[in-house]
Length: 440
Ligand SMILES: [Zn+2]
Ligand SMILES: [Zn+2]
Image (cartoon, rainbow, N blue to C red):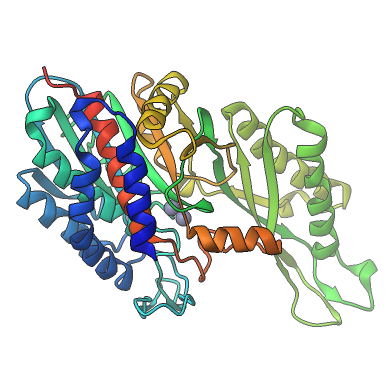
């Protein structure tokens, strides 16, 4: 059935008139699919956690080398950079992220991941490509093959990167800090795609402007004075204080941020105490804090520190036991901004190629993606990340009819229709890249 779906999608794509430069791509992608699916199955069955993507990076590096790219490994940890210089013209960067997640796969599929590891924190867990980065890597190889095979049809420098540790919000920063834009040609354009769990396989989504959020992780240690549960007057109860802080934090978004701006403050973890009749001396909170603009981000982070301290003062906590608020700057993911005019231009091009029905504008989301860093590094770089739908059409229709929610990205049940995602993404990314590098 999957093959029928792909054939239909390919036929639809080919029926649309496209520029002569990229006309034959649909057929070329079709020819690559059996071999790409073998690579996908291997990557899917062998996921690697963030910072450990050695095997995956090796597969990408070997493929690119065979195609004539100049490949450098270990850029920013396990990252790879593959450069193809093909005459004068712009520099275009195409990125795939490579890491899997500490999720035990429960799709029940024949090719499901059986990999288990013990994390640095000592937790034993399954590992799964629950975010679909295996489809990203496979399509990356598809793009590399098609660009190499069509060298006579474009002119410029192609920089293809395999990025580590997207899930930790660290990989893009590490590659940039390791000289991505100084040791290698700096791009004028940066492109990527992400598979999407909320719309049907083969659909392409685009969002001009802010598309994904600033993501900060904040830890608050609330200190108190412990004692017997029967003599609260002799203590300063950190659970009551932390509860007040959680309550007051709700006013940041509802009362301090403009209703026209987007923001999230979620307390995802609250830990304190050990026994019924003991007032503990500490409570720990973990927050995820999200926004689009830098101004809103700064307001939220300052506000969290102010509220924690203010509530502690109100509770009579002594000066040396004020709450400790820490923001993990290393795992911060800046918001993703798709250059608006460039996004519209690419969307029009993709609609001409794939049809108006398959290419649709999507609302922004509060998820995070460190692809943002490649464009933020220099405002002159035009960047765009598109969504490629992965839900099998029949499943999408059935879920809609029954009012059922579908598994999201990061779910142990996320099973994208990989061949359609890979074929669509390979064709879309290759077509866009070639359009940006016309033959001179
Ligand atoms: Zn993810
Ligand atoms: Zn992802």
